[in-house]
Image (cartoon, rainbow, N blue to C red; front, top):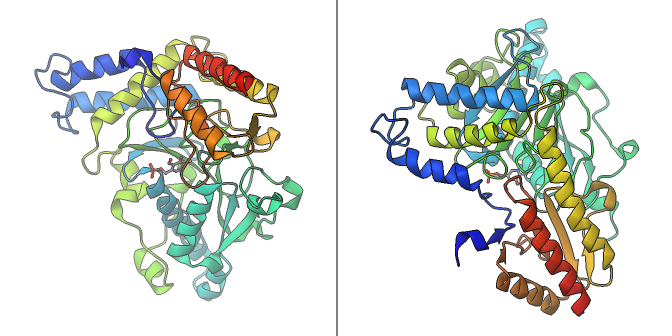
Length: 414
Ligand code: PLP
């Protein structure tokens, strides 16, 4: 089929707006009349630096990220290793800050203090679960406190809710907490935080809802996300890091002190201070991916000329409109469709539902009919099954309307 006939709702790398793809095919051959393609240009060339700066500025404007060298400012970093790499990076870095700050005032009895250190994880789906498991692997499960495990809140023992905050069990002493971790949107389970949680040294994984609504950056110590869902192509991960966590505003633990305490020193390519000091050019940066992200951001900015509101507000309205339309149809036919997560935490990005209570013949028939209509990528994640319609920024309203029509037709035929 022709690409223009396909509507893709996959949760993998998201499609990009067609104009970006068209321009991308040209810059791959010849970037800006340099005679050299973008993937051939050095990441240290003036062109690459301009691309980097354009993308950073775009992101700052979209999410209103404070730009200063002082403690209130934030750095925007581009790294490799995916969202999964950041599961490790945040652990390495935040324990280094926690211990570095402690060692400033305490020389004796550090071991006893470090034994009390906790990393608080809100486990609301498969990705925050994985992140908490990585923390336990790196520093030992005794340091990981599961503030809430959403599986325990449902009769089916599955993810699909965010337990109410009065049931959470954060580490009692705030000063013991090196980080408080949550995943803003759980891609596999279709669960999204309606509003951000809070906690000391708040870290958010926004891989699958990046740039789909305003974010209170100032409430976070770190925010990260792989680019491949809502921002661009696979290959870069964006991290927004508070200056309070970076030298000179933060004191980091010396490597030999971490070794003495049997705590890990992280790999240099995931080391925020190193990447920040080198403006993300410590090692070879896939500048093509950064260019793509910059082009996508530019389009988001262009559709939001009002500088008095967060510039991402227009995209938020579109995301809300599309997901409301689809949930509306799903809720109209409860005999046919069951949305998996609780109504209050339904993701606007990944709509997970079952057909006739998970009847596999009906779900197969649904997928087959969808493919015939050019509606692709609707199969749920292999770990949970069912149907998942991902509604990333690049999915046009018309594609969602087509899917809504199919959902209606399918239900009426039942
Ligand atoms: N976090 C979330 C919310 C994700 O959806 C994913 C991947 O789908 C990841 C982390 C892992 O990202 P990566 O595959 O880039 O390591």
